[in-house]
Length: 289
Image 1 (tube, rainbow, N blue to C red):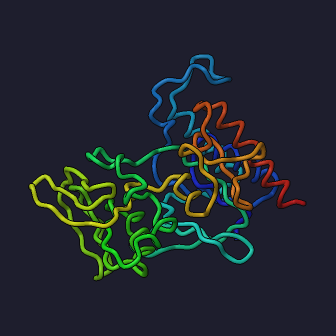
Image 2: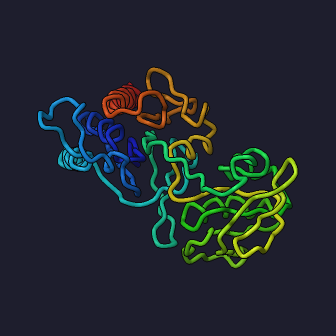
Image 3: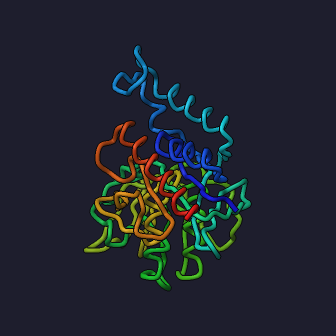
């Protein structure tokens, strides 16, 4: 069992890991997608670099620093977090086989990517049949026909949450190639979606080829799950799509911390480093008490 698993390898997560590992804790960082920092071509407003530095170089240096101190890294996609005895179980996807890692604490630090596709009607029907969390809202669609919008491991994870509850589940890939899926109880539709329609609630999908399908609900699970996605599934408080934390970076769920862009406020490296510092020190304090 790990003392802490950090989800996300940007400045917030890396900083938290540096403090933890130097305090003798066993730490694992899991990250699949690139950090937002990698897209910054040149940074001149961060302390310590007289000629500036690229975001990718800054992030690479941070990762190497953590590795040199003994932080473990796993480059895979986290698809779910579950409660377990004496802690949490983090599930990652590995070529169709789930791998599970146990931890006493979790630090959410994956940033704020919001995977809302540009499909007409999707914003209008959010909360009216369109959801971003199968665990949160699946029970409202008991014995109904629903879809999951996505084509990867995260979409498969949402489908498996829904299967015991609903009448049927279809994976809608919106023109993308789906991963090889192992369940025969799930239909896969690869057509490009033009629009979601309905009166007050979502009722049908119109595709680019002018065909139409009836639907009672749609769960959006594009790309890789974010910190906010995991926080919602664990029951943590969310406001304006940001994770609510106190001054110790604690969420409203015991032993779950969040830091960096996912907590809102200034979306700056200095803020992410500060919050990662606080989260790391609080995990140390909690486990060393």
